[in-house]
Image 1: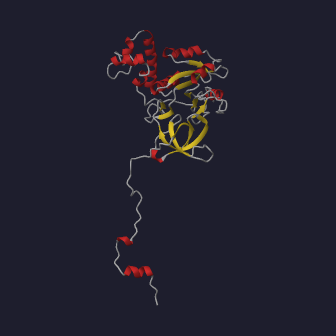
Image 2 (image 1 turned 180 degrees about the vertical axis):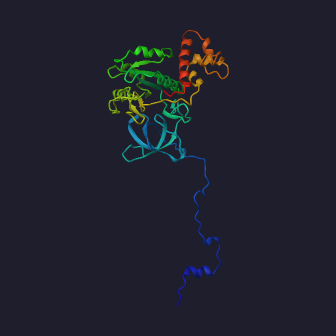
Image 3 (image 1 turned 120 degrees about the vertical axis):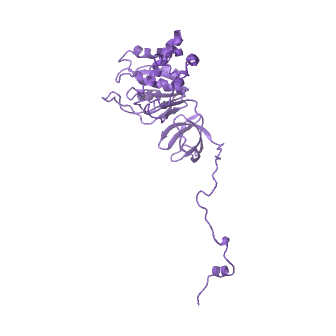
Length: 339
């Protein structure tokens, strides 16, 4: 005699209806929302390193406690760079194998950007929120390149950073000749070589966030190791090709003993400025920004013959000298030469 399951007997007593079938909702059936978690409990911090989808973050006022963080899903592909002010949640202990989450990126006060070259439309943010940019230049071995300095100055002015020149290897060449190229821009010039006293530099950088850039081989990493004795940044000899070899591969913010931070960036081979317009540079100089209001529409401020009616040419005294120095920067910007 066949045994009929109890469940089957019960179903025979009535017709099937939709309640007899259990339907599992498919993926994506929940309505999407643009609302994002507020994360009001997020703690403020600063990004000090970036490495393959993980960010090193220190909390405000506690530079010795560093944690590793991931980017929260709700941020999507929001770019996060060294110097960014962020909100973090989760495990903030900084213990090994723990992971916090970056849930918010604050608006940036300054941005140092560059492109791979002047035909590349993709901007790369090098450092965010730096107050100053120290451009490290060797006076010899490798020989100094005014083109890189001019382009770095353009990027600093356009991004809202205060530029400075740091000259190394002054025992091999006279620094006055090179510094004279930029005298009318009122850019501070400091000797920061291996045997130079760094007191004047500390007066400018302690308590502030300062980015450092320079060609490989100019002594930038050696300078960083002097400023932050436990930084242990790699240093190396200059190669025979003149540009040097890269001795730092990742940007990193390092705490200064007396407060403040220096951001050591990788040695660069070029500095593209495809994202910058001439007026972005002129705007950094109050007297020149006011003068160019009298320029004709579309003026590039490069002067005759391209711009025969440029207001720069009507200026006098110090303003005229500064305008001519800025014109040199604009010529470097227009040159399409990322050096």
